[in-house]
Image (cartoon, rainbow, N blue to C red):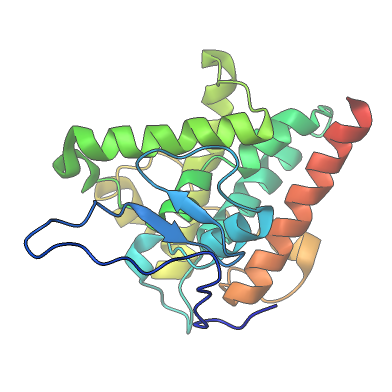
Length: 230
């Protein structure tokens, strides 16, 4: 496997344009696997599972701010939300719904950007279309069904409980600020559900390589269950 930063020119040809001619718009990014992801026109074949795991592990919540030595990755957040689903609905065995939960922020890993919620309205319609295109590509790639209104309610609760808990235990917001400033109407959790699964120190952000490994393992586990049942 080639190392990070080593440029692969085997599939590219250098071309020269006449003076004054504008270069075509580049909206693609080269991923760890070597694949190219066109952010403006993504397809379900543009990335490998490991690319997604690495992207989510290197994309940070809360603007990258943290009271710990490391910021909190979207990969770790996604696993926390999935763990909450398992705690709240232990009687439901639905790997497809679990996979949708795990991948609820997958577009952020492909884009490499988790925009804080209060900024999103200022980014406008173009940003919304960009993220929706990535979400569609993810749904097609992994066979995710759209959320129904009944399904979305517990998902949003898990997502917001996770956010309230992260705000207090990871970033350093007070419980009062969670309610009055962040406007999250849920109490932060006392215990970190991920320590029961992975061990370690409660609420401590994982290093990117570890977050990517754990996310990828869960993605493969759920995908494998779907393949076995399909």
